[in-house]
Length: 214
Image (cartoon, rainbow, N blue to C red; front, side):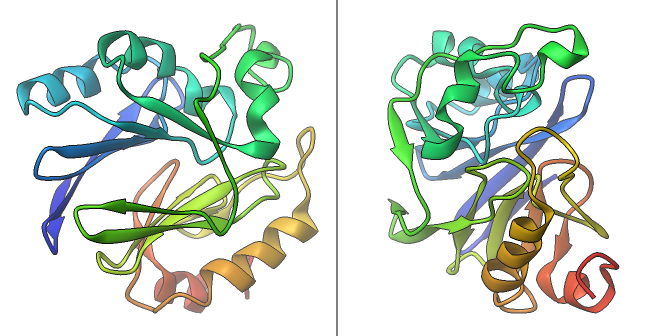
């Protein structure tokens, strides 16, 4: 899937055995990658074919399936700076904390270059990207919202017709639902939701039909 909204281009890659959605986002030659699933060779090949060199790797949270390809990508694009939510920082180096150990894998990532928190903002080609608090699936989970493009990347907080699991170590269902209602359901109805797994949706559709929110 590829789209171009107000000069912002987005391409989705479903990576690894859990089909984690990883996203290349770019304006001209300014490129970021949001989450990097396991086995990201086709993502890397696309970036090289398009002559894109990501400056940022933005992590929505620290679970193993969302950081599994970070080391591979950084080796190929050493200028990419890893941006990780502060409260999930320890998950990058601990298979126990990032839950990959429970799946008999030992996934780790290089350390974060930048720690991010709700309220932070980034700029790409004149567009503003806001870091939203969507913790609850993990202690530090965030979403990335660009009002100019009308898109929010929700990681494993909000899915099409569902929400992220909270019956896992350090999950908090009350916090997750509170953050979804306060920080995602308040966005415009036509905002595209690009989640960590599965198909995209919109805020309006989830407000109307998501059984976990209504």
